[in-house]
Figure 1 (tube, rainbow, N blue to C red):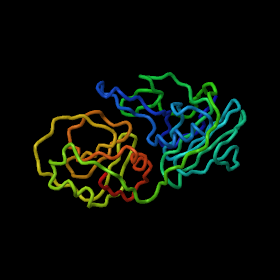
Figure 2 (figure 1 turned 45 degrees about the horizontal axis):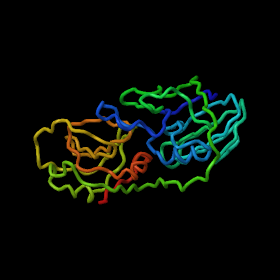
Figure 3 (figure 1 turned 180 degrees about the vertical axis):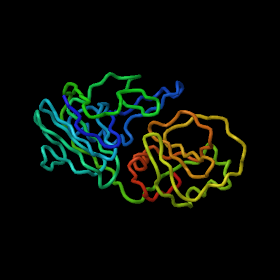
Figure 4 (figure 1 turned 90 degrees about the horizontal axis):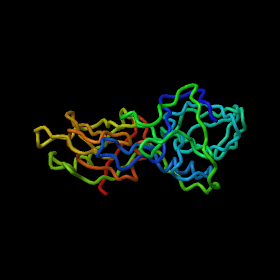
Amino acid sequence: MLEVLGVGPLATIQDQGRPGYAHLGVSRSGALDPPALERANRLVGNPASAAGLELSFGRFAARVHSDTVVAITGATAPVSVDGQDVSGVVAVRAGQTIEVGSPTAGVHCYLAVRGGIEVPPVLGSRSTDTLSGLGPAPLKVGTQLTFGQEQGIAAAEPAALEYGDEIRLRVRFGPREDWFRSAEELTWNRYQMGMANRIGARLNGPALARSVAVELPSEGLMAGAVQVPGDGKPIIFLADHPTTGGYPVIAVVHPADLPLIAQARPGASVVFRGP
C-alpha cells in the first residue's frame, strides 16, 4: 500500500485512457504524456496499460507500507527516498518515504509502482477525468492506494522526449481553416505558453483574424484541436477536453506532439508548422 503524505497543485491516477466514448460525451482522458507513463511502467515490469500517478508540478510525498519498486519519468525533478537522492528504478522498503520535488524541466512527472495502482475501472479505464469527474478523485493527503499483482520483468527504458523552451508542433489545417483571413498565419506567428491544465492550453500572442463572423453550431472536438475563441488567441485541447465546442477549429496538432505542449512550462515559446 502507498499512503499519500503531500501533493502539489494536482496529482491524479492515470493510465492510457478510455477511448471510444466520445459519442457519449466522454473524452479519452488518460496521461497527458502517454510515452512517459509507458516508460515508467516498462521500467518496473508493468504492462503499458497499468495505472500510475501523474504529478503536475511535482511536490509529492508518499509512504509505502510494503516493499516495492518504483520508477519516475516525465518532467525532470529531484527524487528522494528517506531524504537520500535517487534516480531511475528504485527499490523502496516498507516504511520508507518517497518524495518528488518541483520539476526543473517539463511539468508532469509519472510515478509507476510494480503491479500498477489498483482502483476500480470506469468505462474500462482507471484514469481521472477532471472535466467529467469520471474515475478516481484527485489524490489528497491521506489517500491510500493499493498495488496490483506483479506481471512481468523490467524492460529497458526507451528514449525520453526532451522538454525545451521552444515547442515546435506539427499541425494539419482544418476543419474550419476557411473561417480565417489566412490560416497560414498560425504557422507565421510565435506564441507563448499561457495558462494550462488537463483540459487544454491557452497561448498568448498575435490574434488570428476571422473572415467568417457568424456563430458556429457546436461541433465535435478531439485532443489536439486548435480552437480559436472570440479573442483570436489559440487554445490547444488536451486529454480531458470537451467532446464538442462552438468556436472554429483552425487546425489539429499531430498526436505525437501533444506530450510536448502538455509538458511546456508557462512562457515557453510555441511554434506551429505544417505536417
